[in-house]
Amino acid sequence: MKKIIIFLLLFRFAEASLIGNPSDPAILEEGFWISDRCFSSIRAGMAGDCLFLKRLRTCRTSHKWGISRPEMNWNLALADIGWNIRERFAIHLLAGPAAAVQYRWRSGGAAYEANSHQGMFWGGSAKLTVLEVQETTLGVDFHGGGIEWMEGPVIQNGTPESRDFTSRLYFWQIAAGLSQTVGSLRPYAGAAVQQLSCILHSVSFKHLRFHDLVQVGMYEGCSFSVGSKISLNIEARQFFESGIAVTGELRF
Image (cartoon, rainbow, N blue to C red):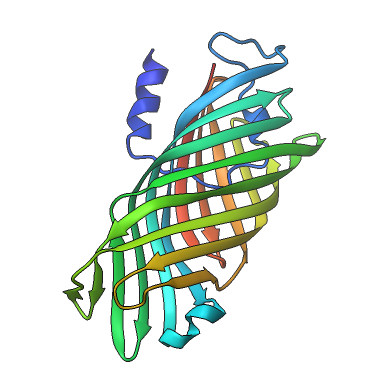
């Protein structure tokens, strides 16, 4: 019970990575009601993501608006349900509210912001442990998802427009990395490729579409096992985006 209380207190401030540890399927060895000899098990946790900066580019159909220096950031809060198989393969489903999403760009000498404090994130991931050599693990991860029903004001040079914008975005991501076991710690590092597309409708611009400016990046982090049933994770991402995240998970 004491471990659960500590876990929940930490989780109150947690924001979770959208990549994670390559050896995630094998980090939790057993569950509260499932032994480590079981073929599969259920995992659950809280998740989210804190994206400080992601640089974007306009697609060809949006060039007529003279958009320059588009970028975005977000804060997400998610629920995470996972299914673990043989401690080598894990499927995760994620869903939850988009607490804050902000777009920024310039056009015609004016500075624009589009701020949303609503929306729904949905997504999923699949992690596969490819190779284990002593205490080193090679794993791959596929991620996909999006944010729907974003809405809020467009601000031009500090002045809101008369009507709110609406927006949605979708992404997919492939990552691979190495994880090393050091006692109860599992530090890791890897590389990721991401494709993201944002669609925004507003009074001034009617229809804008943005994509990633940089699609390849790196990530590194460290997982910590609290016993064999609870894990915590902290992670940072660079190049294709700037973000930091913390995750936690229970295995049943």
